[in-house]
Length: 374
Ligand code: MG
Image 1 (cartoon, rainbow, N blue to C red):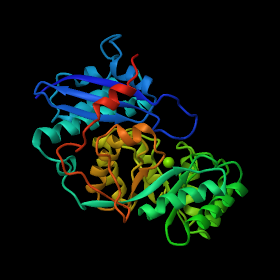
Image 2: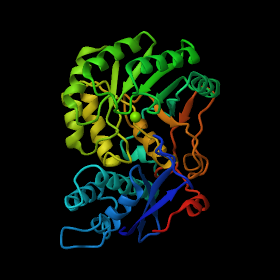
Image 3: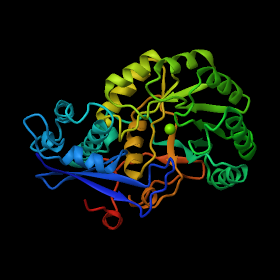
Image 4: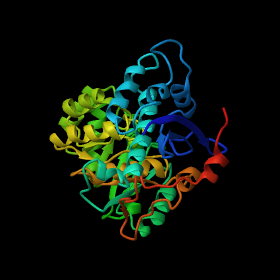
């Protein structure tokens, strides 16, 4: 089997709000083969930049769009294809958006391999530890207690055993952050797990230590991304100074960056985003690296059903995966781009897909309606 083309399709809702919700647009990657099998992937990044990174025409021998590293290859040579893309990446950038773009292509290639063999991706990865996974409700942190209460009253009765409030109103001041955590705990009651995603806006290490310790009194389960990903020393010192679980990893890609975070910082939870970290090929290696250090996997996934499916296959294949991030911002793309979008049951559990490949079907009508021609 040979890959014949790679397409980066930008889709976006009508109006983009300047809030921390990454599901307002996306890039759907389609990888075509000479046997008629089409693999589907997704990239969480700037869609317009991703499209350029994938489709840019050649400037010279080693400067061209990623698709030229992929066309003509056998999708079952996925490791070789990953390295071919990375070798071609250095003019465009060896981190960030180029790795994001590679992630979507890699995801689509795993989808092809599954469809060609009739196996779900997790079987290709070595099999599944579980048939389902507990999902937590992932929402932005509102600015007021009434809205926090509305969220708790809406989602906890649906079965969720945990809510993560992130970004949004967090980071204005230590006092306000603590006030919001208290409000969330009041709204949720004692039992459900409460997670707080700082969205990288804390800047004061000692302040972060104090707040993490204060959050413990309100049963916060983990504090996510307190600092920007480059502040590895701050992560290390925070993790050494508090009993609070600290999570990170959604912003980084390649084994090189994960090696620094996993082996130098003593974090508790690793959160690779399969649509950014380098794809399924890299996520699998990251998880092995983290497992050796006793670090739990909870992938970041704030996009559509495509990324959710990829995350579920990785979770299935990981011995110490704990939760699925379930986006409840309820954008049109997060809810409708994939047919029969994954649903939670009344215990807050999502079933691991078992159909070949990623096990999803795009709604082509939705895709075409929200597609942006560039
Ligand atoms: Mg986050």
